[in-house]
Image 1 (cartoon, rainbow, N blue to C red):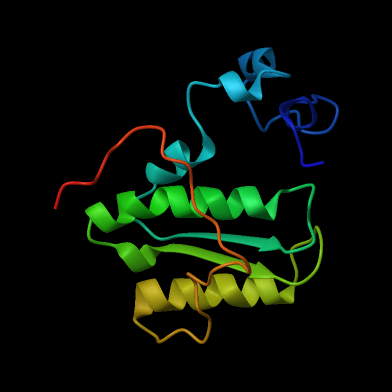
Image 2 (cartoon, one colour):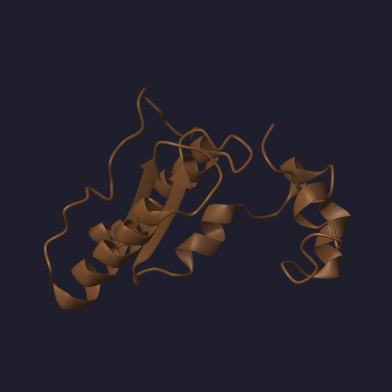
Length: 140
């Protein structure tokens, strides 16, 4: 199972991560009026990189990848398609040397125009398509 709101809002573990009112959504995640990619879209057009372990099912790398895909149209619309990035490495729940190297390479690319060695829009294995809840296309 991935981390749910009950785990994320546990005041014994994460006392400063969320507002106490967010706890009212525990067990009602599907009813939230917004999703993670809405918040990520607020970062655009500034660079945003997500790093995660492929085997970190608790943090939900598939959900992270879905949020990455859902955020891409916003970056495309703002003319910054390469500033939306993702780096999913092998392994579990930790931030390690590979994650740090990816973050530095992403920053060097966007702030100093140094060509990256990483591909920051690499697709996960398998085909993932997001469901269409309404017909919308970004303006050109």
